[in-house]
Image 1 (cartoon, rainbow, N blue to C red):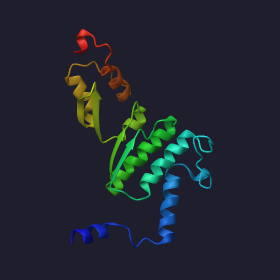
Image 2 (image 1 turned 120 degrees about the vertical axis):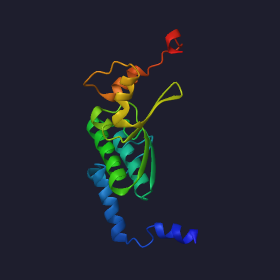
Image 3 (image 1 turned 30 degrees about the vertical axis):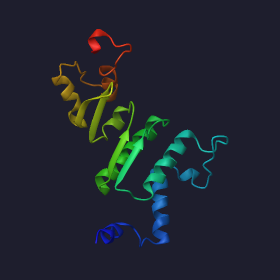
Image 4 (image 1 turned 90 degrees about the vertical axis):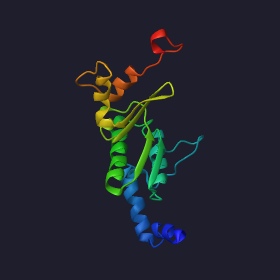
Length: 172
């Protein structure tokens, strides 16, 4: 019975036209329509830019329509506009299609940050905060951090959680 339930979740009845429409939709959402006929290239022969290659790798993950998507640095190498649009796309997938998105992102712009629902902040291998991203700054205020009124949360977290090596007396 479990195999039947699993099979029912797969898109086994998808037509070629539906598959093609899914591919075009993902290509368009990732801002890759202008290079849809291009080869990706290789280490030795660059055809797509680094940002385009990053977005192609995200598209490869999305095409199978998984319920859980894990991405390591999906915005690295992208300009702030493309990084924000990737965060928005991932946010929309989570909200509208019920996907679970887990991503590591270092230093997102403030616009990208506000697309995060939940946040885990780590420093020196320890979890410092885990919870609703909208509550993260208030949490730091309750911990007696001087949080500026208008700041990019990720910039603040980078400064507040900075560990200098070798560790100083006040870091321990």
